[in-house]
Length: 111
Image 1 (tube, rainbow, N blue to C red):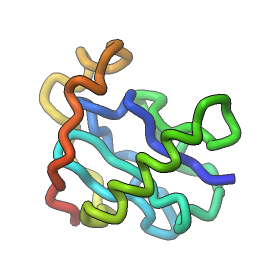
Image 2: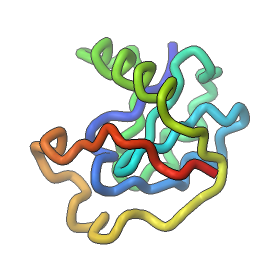
Image 3: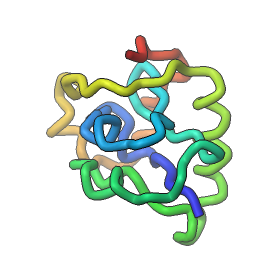
Image 4: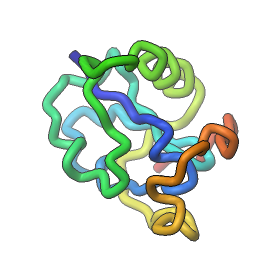
């Protein structure tokens, strides 16, 4: 099993999860985070830290696409290990449908 970040993270990018990760497997895009599925040790400590409920186990239905999505972007974006402020308007965007339309493939700063 591994954990993945889903589209609930888009336009929110809460980073509470990165501080608790013991293996630094989070990677930062311009407007979301991803988890490298081969680096995740399945400890699960990140899942309850996400205010947007964007981190899910890959054992849930229809998570295969998210595993590949997370793999693709974790190999392109920089690692993030330090908590940052969420994106402006994160509270309003939390839980909004259709967030894939807002996705940016651009890398974040990492750190």
